Image (cartoon, rainbow, N blue to C red; front, top):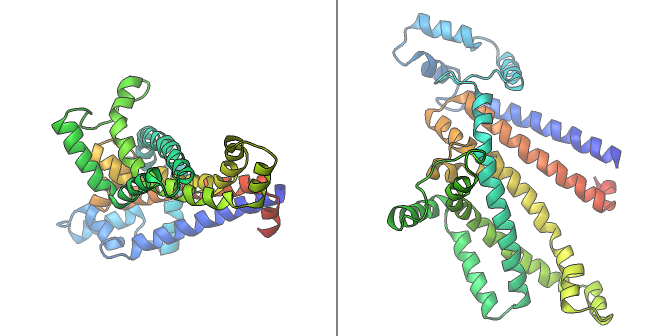
Length: 319
């Protein structure tokens, strides 16, 4: 098991390194995003040649690309990466936005996992009946609605028309827990809708597949009730893919997947900081956020692999 964990950690580090190289190269070759584009954004489009050359020297743009990569990664790891547009420290801005992003993603994750599992189990238990068809319809509607559209509609009707929720903004948990939850309730629901649809449909399929397994029929033959069979055998095995998917979705959402939700509701989290940086084509913050997001996604993927290997020794031999 120890060798497997070491291999997975080494693999994680290699993936992160490859992502850092790829991200750096992309931002240095895209039109308007290379060295000249960055110099113009820092010095201004009306700056003279002397000023531009001084900017190149100050920021290391006159160095070979591998030197620029090394300096950029060193600054990133040391927390010295500075935004070109407003001279703010990128790490400080990301750390400042993490509480809002974490509050949004954790709350939404609890909702989409709980409701998705509930809907999936009910659909499987009443397969082919009205409950199943009704929940299937709700799931398809949820999957089909883009987050940005659903967020704007919810904001318009539930905030400005009915005045049921506040128009947005983030209240720190330590400042007022009730107001914290009140401001996040609508973003939680908007972000959860898509995942609830996916999870409920996936779990319904898994439960119906597991129901046909021999060990489930054997459990019924031994006299176990339907509730005992569902909780001890069917649901426990059907939930394995759900837990895997939840780990990956949670990491991706925490790593920047909630950018639209944060922007719509003005939560001032990492996602909104990313959106503002993209709008300004400010390379250091974008690179910092991409690497931050990649870290969480790869880390959670590694944790899921290790947990799987712990539960199923066969995976250690296959990896």
